[in-house]
Length: 198
Image 1 (spheres, rainbow, N blue to C red):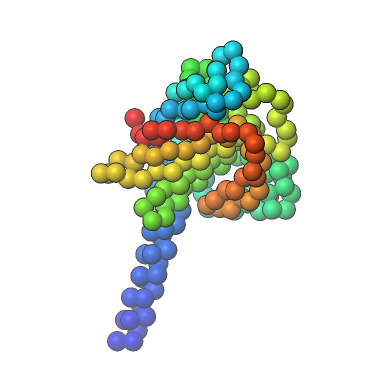
Image 2 (cartoon, rainbow, N blue to C red):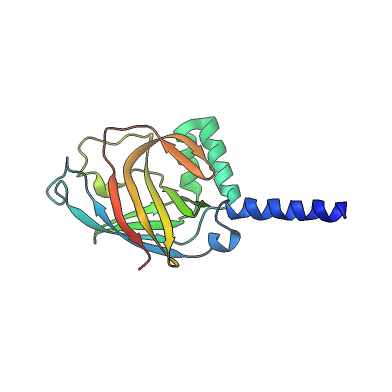
């Protein structure tokens, strides 16, 4: 009887751990696509994209980074900073792409997903800033900056929808296997509204 109780407790722990964890193995290889409306900041802008304008955003995630891939990049960043992370991202396979309007495309090399309390949070990182926005954000980008996507999705009647942000060139403060923290910046991100699957 005592053995049965212990076994049940172990199974319950494993179930709870997996339900709040990263993307399961079957999801890591599952292609997902999202569409959204990108709301440009009210300041800045150029001839092609004016301040406060909107742009159609298409996000294709061919696969998610495995736990091992994520651990390697976390370790690289912890030991060697942005230079080591950029080198690791440069060697990684493309996991997805962001298409902005009809002209801009940006590759994603690290893509992670985690669900907690019914909310799925996805973050993705590219090895360089998002060049599509170079003309919008004045001033040159720096070597320590990375293009970053962050989504927050909630299931509503079985279909996920939510919001997110696109960071033109973020400086990573903390990188974990299932979370990313950026340093504060005066540069406003592109806010994504109506994120959903087409």
